[in-house]
Amino acid sequence: MPTVEREVLVMPTGFASREAASFIAQLDDQSARLRDDTRGLTPEALAWQPAPGMNTIGMLLAHNAIVEAFWTQVGPLGLQKPYEVMSVLGIGMDDDGMPIPEDGEPPATLRGKDLAFYDDLLARARVYAREAASKLTDADLEREIVRTRRDGVIHETTMRWVLYHMVEHFAGHYGQINLLTHQYRLVGTRV
Amino acid sequence: MTTTLQTLLEVPPGFRSDAVGRFMWQLDEQRRRLLADTRELSVEALAWQPAPGMNSIGMLLAHIAYAESHLTQVGLEGKPTSDTKAAIGISEEEEGMPLVEGAAPSPALAGRDLTWFDQRLARARNHTREVALALSDADLLREVRRQRPDGTQRVFNVGWVLYHLLEHEAGHHGQINLLRHLQRVSGFVGP
Image (cartoon, rainbow over all chains, first blue to last red; front, top):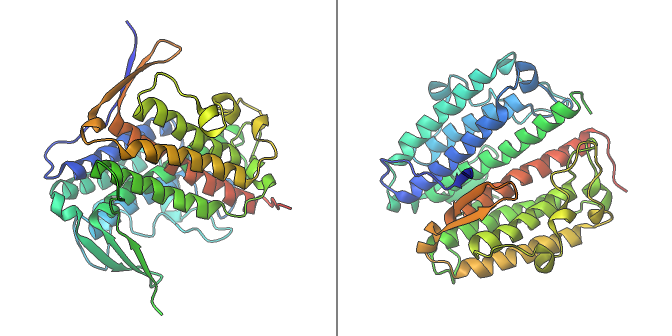
């Protein structure tokens, strides 16, 4: 009997919009693969920096959770400034330590944290995002969103872009986590 | 003067399916940012490895182009096998991934400059767009079955392939940015 690997997006139920459900399915697929790839990482591996001023795996995991919760507030929940994620995740918006200063160390807030801590952050962010996205209708996806970024740039976007960005942002940092995991196993020292 | 950034995620013209058109917009947005992040990389920077056995930026660019060409042929077009050498000028062996432990980058990529990689990426994307233009909403659910050399059967659908093209490029783009950062902190200085 041959082994069958099935790769299709599993649509979550209870969504008002199939397209919004698809974005959450994409995020869930990313999370499942990230979870597989990070099993066995120790607190030391999670806190390892290739060089001062570079992100750790732990920082990237925390960043993905924070950003997912943040964009859920900007997009599906339609909240206004000031945004805060402490009530959702138990850590603050800047507790990922990113962007890290040149020659900086990982933030004290993440010191000694284990994989269960990061798993919990990511799970909380996803529950929050899924719940909010499930209420979006197809018409909501066309809604324009305008916000002023920290750097003063006015960002005009749509709900659909916010959901897309949550996926591609997660995927980009997931790729970096895999590279850091490889480098840690191979080198384990700073460049 | 205020700067305004617009990211509206619109359906490009000419697509039979709006959903497919939106995936194409996302892919093109990823590519725009990838190209912006890689301008002016020298031949040496493209071939630089953080350690033997680790991918170079050139390998990742070649891999993005190779994977897109392969997946478009077998996934979107439903061909039994792909011929990426004919389509974009790189075979699976030449792209060199996965890299063997302790190995240098693929010899087929030695001395290649950014223009060469840009051309592979552009050829792959042009073909993807050409194929995607004709896909319908119903095509997104079409299942593709492939048998791997180890006997494993892989089952996926066209919708998953489009999502995978996106997250695959986003993940490796994230890695390319991390490698550029590693080059800066490691003291690598191109000519």
